[in-house]
Image (tube, rainbow, N blue to C red; front, side, top):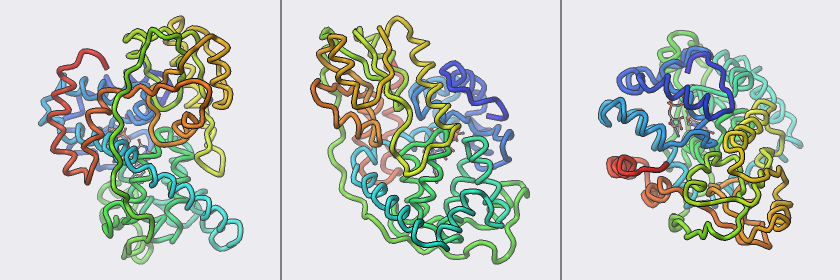
Length: 401
Ligand SMILES: Cc1cc2nc3c(=O)[nH]c(=O)nc-3n(C[C@H](O)[C@H](O)[C@H](O)COP(=O)(O)OP(=O)(O)OC[C@H]3O[C@@H](n4cnc5c(N)ncnc54)[C@H](O)[C@@H]3O)c2cc1C
């Protein structure tokens, strides 16, 4: 991804994909673990800010990579893209894990108000003022750029939990406020994984040698600076999965309002399937995921991405009305809509808002890509992985995204 600016547009996402595709085979497999610092993340794609809002889709990314490499040659990259799909499906089928995280976060937030020592440690960690050079650097890199390399995210989360002794939920919240790719599934479940909740008892310990090797000596934590043990954190047990959602039959001939939201900004396939919105209602990017505000970078990236989608699709959307979730139904009714059609919103604030809408049927359009993959998010990723060849085969056989 190097030092190209992360613009909130589909064309910037496609350009980043075009630049990255030649590297998706051997280069990625051999070098993806190295965190060379902001401006030097050349061996990873930097596509997550685009994929997480579906300015470009996972399916487009996989297609472009398969057009240039065999599935074997690009297997490492392909499997990382499917990690995202797997986490999405896993949480979609266990929404209680998100609800429990949010409740725990509020409790941890309350503790910050009443425990001065805890509050000071949390503030130091968020500002990058702990005295641990690598950690402080990553806290500041994240705040300044809205991105962190995957390995830095793992080390950061591990030091947050096991060295600084801070609640993991506050760390996950810090990430969600600052990451341009902030996503309830990938973020919450990765933090749970580091803490030893996701794979029960299996934690991730950040080790000085590993940090020195994969930062190519930019950081070498001193003896005694980092925790040497990572005892699993107690917390909410993994519930059994609910059924995976199945696509609804949607009558596109019925007068419809399109509801656009940040979880999926490529509704082109709905327009191609015959949707002719009488109006488009656009939910604003601000959302109640955190007791604090999202960073300005995240807010402006999300507003920019929404604007890009509406500009790009232009007349096909009808009149576009930005409105708060509570006003979406009345705006749709006023335009004569008999239903609201919206790209499927995954577990998180948009889905919570959709669930509260009354007065018109809300049809959530599930992509074939998600519908095929999520039924396999039953256990761990390694079971899910067995299905990747057939999921790739289905992509090859499809015409539309
Ligand atoms: C504690 C922690 C928190 C995280 N929070 C988020 C988050 O909020 N949003 C988010 O999108 N990812 C999150 N990740 C996963 C991963 O770090 C990022 O997806 C990845 O670093 C994005 O950079 P990239 O696009 O250059 O990745 P690449 O290495 O180029 O990978 C290509 C794509 O594959 C997917 N991907 C890669 N690695 C992972 C992974 N480990 N888990 C899930 N998907 C992956 C992403 O969509 C990514 O864009 C988190 C990981 C950790 C350890």
